Image (cartoon, rainbow, N blue to C red):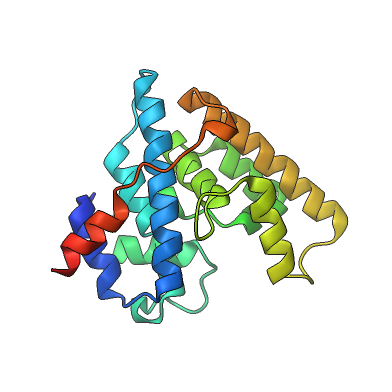
Length: 196
């Protein structure tokens, strides 16, 4: 298996026994990524929509104990490693650098900005989807509440600035303004079908 079908990706995710909160987030990210990828394709830009959708659905597998990813790997690297180990090396680069923490480091933020468009779509979709689609401002407020001892003010400002640049880049590629981003709802249906 290289790029799984929607059904295969859903079956793989369910096999890792994700809790409901994980499923809600994975579905939100996958649906937003699909919407963005569809916009990119409509503008005549080549992007592998299936890879974007399935990578987005599986982007956080390293948070699931059943995935048994190596403990020394950082979040994102663990998901990429799991995808490679499970025969999906094409998806690994699409999830490796999605964590917001990558935007706190100059070199890692530059790597995110220079990544393939498909990877930037997945990364941005993760910034717009907590349990549901939300603005980046709302998402950053949520992170600040959950991690009050996070970054100092200068690093936090740099992360927000870099996330805003990512938003401009991906939305421009999809021909959308940030407030036009929606969910292309496919993931819940795929999970229901895979569970049968």
